[in-house]
Image (cartoon, rainbow, N blue to C red; front, side, top):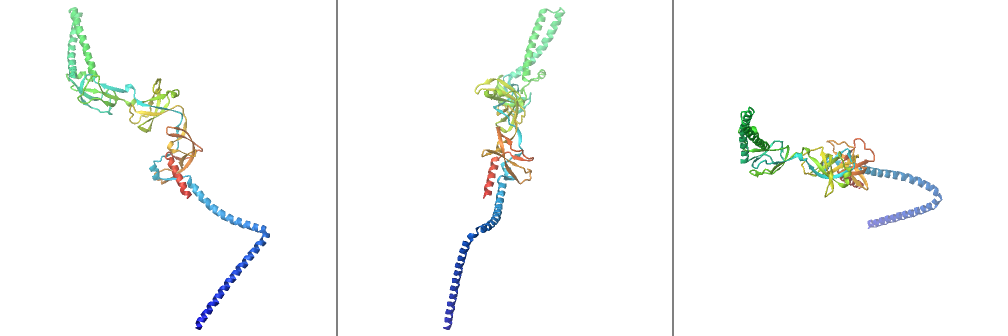
Length: 439
């Protein structure tokens, strides 16, 4: 019982101590508040002093804080700006894009006149092979597209009429030999006043008549390509060869085995493309700008990547109707590859010169009414892993045949190279990098 009373007394004593401490703390807090209010009232008399101290304190603290934070913030934006105006491509990206990197080159960006037409060959470079005499095709030695030489055998044909022509020639030739001898003998007798003039005149007439007939046979045999010396040895041609009259390419084969061809029938067409040229048309509005000696840049539709260069050597003097235009003939300088007559071509004739820096249209981009190309000063070799490109503002001039005239605002440093295509992709990648750094 005594122990319980003592415990209760101890708890009450502790409670009194806690309450006493709480009241004491509350009084101290109220006292401090009163002192603070008093200091504020007295502080109005010392504004100048406080302002000065406050200014020093604030300026010092503000400067340290702002400079420090501003410096860090500026560094962040400076680093961001450093990468915002450039784009990095890996070697794999460059190969996948087939990106062309080279220096800017000069190109003639003068005034051009648009033309179109086709490839043609002069008439003397085309040949149509016909039969001299009606016969049947025995064999064909060429196909379309084959290259042949002048005098090369194209085919063989045979017919009884060809055999008869050869035998008739041999008979007439032997008769001519006899009549020539008889004529010479009668001439000798007549000159010696032994023979009569009538016999002499008859021998002469028979000889000259047969001689003319034999000469006709010779011409026919020559046209057929048959050798007289062989026939005079009684060696006849069973199958008669058909020869190519010119060197060139077989353009068409119009016969087949066993076919009977008439003397006027066309069997083969041969074309020599060594003298192939451009037959162009210029409309009436541009005809006064055209003259001999001007150069043309031409493109074949089937080979758009290969340019042909030609020089005008003939200007037509009459108009074609529908459309109203004149014909031009231009000699092609770089006859690379197989050029086929009749192929459609288009191009431009240079009528004024203006050598300027130029870039393919795919290598320049327009944004916000400004034009940009992408340049790099990094060395391009087989071991590069990444290349940095930067946009460069330029002034775009005239556009001609897929190229744009470029005027630089400042000269490029030595070694600077330019991306000649994929400018829009590079610009998109650059903007993508800007967006990523802004976050």
